[in-house]
Image (cartoon, rainbow, N blue to C red; front, top):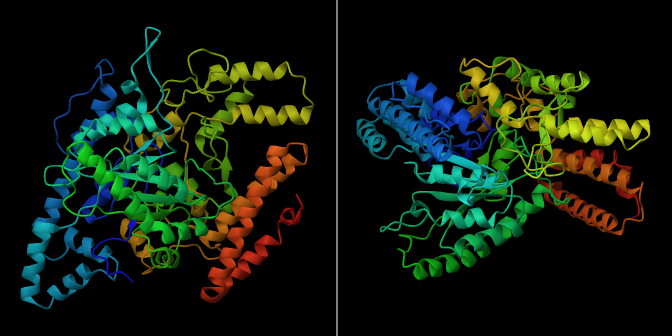
Length: 590
C-alpha cells in the first residue's frame, strides 16, 4: 500500500447548496471538497452571512451590475479562502500547544500517514517536536477549495429580446467568476463534454503554467468511462490545458443527477482505467507540451500529475481500501454519508432527520430533474410534498424565479423550465386533448408533474441551516445517493473520518450490499424496465440493438466480478448469484 502523507478521500459536490461552505469546515484539516457554482443568489447570501460572522467588509453585488454573476462568485470564493487561511493560521499558532485544532488535524489522518507517525514521535522526542512544529508552520497541507460547474447548465440570457453574447451564459459566467478568484485549486467539470466552454478556459492564464511552470488553477474531469476521458483529455491537451485528475463516478452516483451508462459496470470501468492509465498520460503529455510550445508558453516545471479517483456508492473502510489498492486510485470520494454530518455541510434539521430515518425503500431514482436526467432523492422531502399538493389543487408546477434550468422550447420561443407552472399547465392542457385510456393518462400525468424546482429546492436547506428567513412556499429538495439508506447516525466530522478509515463503524446493523452489487442491482432494474417497454413494441429494431448491447455489457461485468471476487471475497459472489435469481429477464432471448 502507498504511504500517504495526507487524506485518501475527498468530498465531492453535494447539490447546489449543501456543500457551498464545506471547505470552510474541512479545508483547515487537510480535506479537499467541492463548491457548486450554480446559484449565484445563494452564493451572495452566504457571502453576506460569513462576512458578518468573521467581521469581513461586505458590499452587496446587485443584479444591476453588468457582470453580477461572475463578480458574486469571485467575491464569495475569495471570502472562503480568507476564512480558511485564518483558521489554518490558528492551527499553526497552536503547533507548540497540546490539544486544539492541530491535534484534531493529526488524529483524523489515516493511520498509514507518515505525518501521523511523526506527530506521535514528537510526544516522546524534543527534536522531533521541533521538527514537526517547523513543518506545520511551513508546509501544513490545506484541503483544496475546489469548485464544480455542470457544463449542461449553460443557458443563454436575453436582454430586450436579444440574445446576449456567449460569455454571459451561466456556465461561462461561473467559469469567469472562478478564474478571477484568488484560489489555487481545481475546477471540476461534470455533466458531459462542452467544446465551447472548454475553449473559453483558454482565455484565463491561471489554467496555464506560469513562468516557473506552475499551474494555479487545475482541471478535474468527472467521467463515466475511459473513452470519454481519453477524448476529452486529448481535447484539452491540444489547447495547452492539462487535466490533472479524472474523477470516475459509479452509476449509483454520489447523489443528485445520475448519468447511468449503457450497462457497463463500475468495476470493469475502473479496470480499464487501471490498464490504460499510462496510455492516457503519454498521449496527452505529448499534445500538451506541443500546444504550449505553439502558444510560446512556459513548459511545466516538472511532469504534471495525473490523478485518477473514484466515487459513488462507497460506504465502508473495506471498500475504500479496495478501490485504492485494487485499482490504484489516488483518492476516493465520499459524499452522501456527509449529509448526516452537520459540522461539514449546510442542512436544515428537518431534512437531516428525514435522511437519518430513511430506509432502503425510501430512496429512489426519480424524474424530479427538469433536465430529464435521472435524479436520486428520498420520499417525503418538503418540496415533493408541496409539488403534489399544488397539482392536486389545480396549480401544477412552480413559478420560475431563478431560471437556471430553462431549456424547453416545446411551447415557447424562449426556453422555459419543465418544472414551471407555465410549462406544466400547457403540457397538461395538451394531454387533455389526447383522449388516452385512464391508465395511460395517469402515467403521462404523473410524468408531467414530477419535475420540481431544483433551483429553489436545492438551496433552501442551506439557507434554513443558517437561520435565514424563507418564504413558506420555498421548500426543500434533497439529493442523496441510495447508499445513505444504511447510515442513520447524525455524526461529527471526526466520527465520519474514523468510519472511512475503519477506526469505528457508523453503519446500521443489518444487511448492506457491496457497492458493486448495489450498482448492478440498479442496472438490472433499468434493464427490466427497458425489457417491459420493448415488449410493447417488439418491432423497434434500434431499441432491440440497444437492449442486446446493454445485456451483453451486464454479462461482461457480472463475469468480471465473479472472476475478481472468487478468491478475494467469495461472499460477494454468493451475493451476486442471489441477486441474479431475482431477474429472470436476463434469461430472455432477444
